[in-house]
Image (cartoon, rainbow, N blue to C red; front, side, top):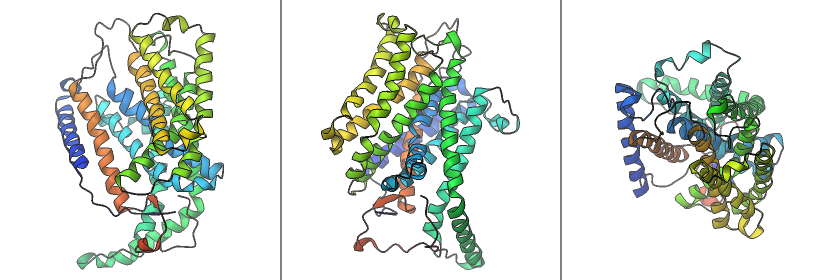
Length: 412
């Protein structure tokens, strides 16, 4: 398998649908920046955050975990068999974290102060640690993307006219970056894994310090551990779903053997997560809140079912070796982690004296859907420009020229 840019038509009926969703979201986004949060959201002084933090940020960070889990598997644990999944996973993580950063900008009332944490440090703040780790990890992801850029453009720079003089220096810069990063990429890979474990767990710390504002079903001292374990659990299912959807969209042969081997690792990870989750519930005796069967209890039950079902499915060899089976099981995990973040940040979080029950407005939903649609469109464009998706190395596809520095070690 070798990574190449996809040769496929860009515009499809689905792309037109996604474009409409993206444009609708951009309209509400413009209203938000012109007239403020109150013009498009149901947020107020009692409910300081809602859909954008719960889904766009908290869930977005978790669902981008495929980047650090695949990097840890291949480059730290040296499981070279799975190398083909690393490049698409890291690219998806890069896009995910970029849109998470944009969601933070949108959610902050005075968005023009978003740069403050970079220069105004507060080492006692869990939110500061989350923010700095996400910023640095996003930079690391962009650095890890540079070898893909160099592979695509080395010896292919061909400016014309007045810009002809740039051909040689730009190509020289690409070769320099390719050579130096091949020697130092392991530093950024290790840094990316460490940074990810830090901020994935610290998102749970944010909710621990919420204290009694959190529903007892979710408020626990081990919430940072649960956030980290759930992020690790959803990393491989995200890779599987992304790979299968991309293969279907671009008419490529799915890497079912690689994905099946990856699937066998998921059940033990989910099992560890469920063991801590259920064990904590009985230790703190919060199971009595489930027996109330109120709205919070049903949301908790739904979350647990969405995680327990794929745990059973991934134990089945028949399911894991089936393309549809492993896809459905992965969707269950993704849905379970998504619901977990919604439960923690929206359902369970209830500030004191809040007279109104929060529900996202049409504007909030539109912007979130617009972000998702835009992410898919950008993903499709990038995989057609850069060698990201692994494909069969047959003679019919040898029209892509080799990279300029073939002796350097390619980490991704």
